[in-house]
Image (cartoon, rainbow, N blue to C red; front, side):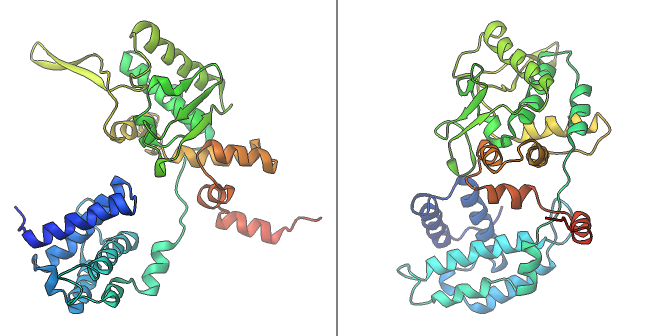
Length: 340
């Protein structure tokens, strides 16, 4: 068990509450802040924050440069280090205004958690991320089995992601009431659906492949007519497991949403690996669809509509995040300028 400094725990709780209620940060951001602060606290052997000195911040930065990731066994990435330092910078800056601490900590002390310029450039660098082509996605989809109800659900999940480009966290929390099969859209209501930044989004099904729509439509009919699911039941329910002859087996579907998107990510990764393709994630579909939309919606108004459809307020976000010009394409365009 890790050591606990009661004074530290109380002030950390106040800060995390401040992030949640005053700064309106989401749960994931608050959790990352807590983890980053705990990492610094551990490096000081859980010394009282009132004993903070800039030397501790300097040593902490040096230690982060030497630490390795528990999951990969490799040195921490620059982006991870930046996130940890940012969490502590915000905390120390806030701490400098709190009774019992402001006489010991100055706002400028937070600057000692800044990343060096070279590391910041590396952390902020935009890198090409792999994504499946439309043909690869269709190939993986065709290889998915359809023997059990869970197979049926998994294939409909794949189809839905290709029809909408929705984020996996939102998909995990969708219920039948959010689907409008008449107008062909999904209403990602932020009151119920775990959308990014709690944004409510209306997403119309993309005309990418009729097979995807056929599969998903059939799944919705199955839930309503065979499984007798109602509006508040999940769109992609977890399996119900019960012991049969001493072994847990799937006996149906549960009427509750997934708590997170881990199971959804695993379904998609397995769909690709079973088709002898790289284990792409659901998020990679968004880049696949943006590349498709770049040709399918050539006018400014049409592409703006697509951008809104995947939840972006600005077309700039869509283009910069999902449709960058590769180095190879950059070279081609520069060497062969278009004539006007």
